[in-house]
Image 1: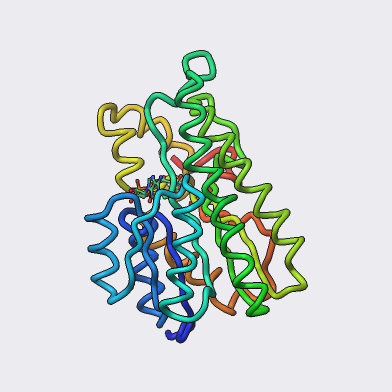
Image 2: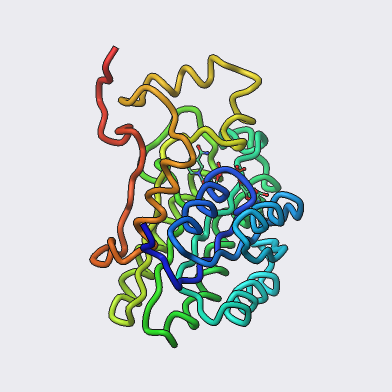
Length: 254
Ligand SMILES: NC(=O)c1ccc[n+]([C@@H]2O[C@H](COP(=O)([O-])OP(=O)(O)OC[C@H]3O[C@@H](n4cnc5c(N)ncnc54)[C@H](O)[C@@H]3O)[C@@H](O)[C@H]2O)c1
């Protein structure tokens, strides 16, 4: 399918996991892809693979983010899709009783402030075009509580969800769609890092997933391609759950 032929897509955190799978998927659907990552080696390799552009970006820096969207526009002539996806889930973000302000702020900056900055930078290009699709990566933890808390992470994703909804409503009549992508647990380095030391922690979570497994990054990238394309033209301000059924489950199959 060439649903994104002629479109320019900016993907933050494109060097790994969901971002990398989305770089590949959006390119395979015809998009010219701009990869943004703080990891130069991984980001440059991802861009090279799809003959795209790599822009070294720290998504917590307003000047970096402004330069990123300017580079996309200057190089390829438009900004049609912004997949604001970079995020972290560090081990020192834990129960509210254990988590210090350092970890709290670091996670808020990378997961939430970054989405504010990327939307702020992307929207003016899309307003001038009268068209655009913004996809912000939230998480299923934005709609469900966990006793195994990562307090700043959950709060940051709740922020991404409500900010996306608000922007989707505000800019709807200017042709700009904004949706929050809410993945369930996905088999990426972010999750592997969290569970590698403790298989019991992974098992405790898996039992809640009706499909009985974590998602593969390609399954999330397929949803990103849908939200990026005109196939989702009547969708905005949505909570787009791709979660293996977790959020709908009470008792799961044995
Ligand atoms: N893996 C999961 O289970 C899961 C579930 C729900 C939501 N998410 C969200 O999906 C997104 C992607 O997660 P992933 O699992 O693919 O993670 P990942 O760790 O595999 O990839 C994240 C990428 O973001 C980059 N990055 C980190 N900080 C950055 C910064 N300051 N500036 C620019 N780039 C930066 C990293 O270098 C990395 O390439 C995150 O927002 C995450 O919270 C993940």
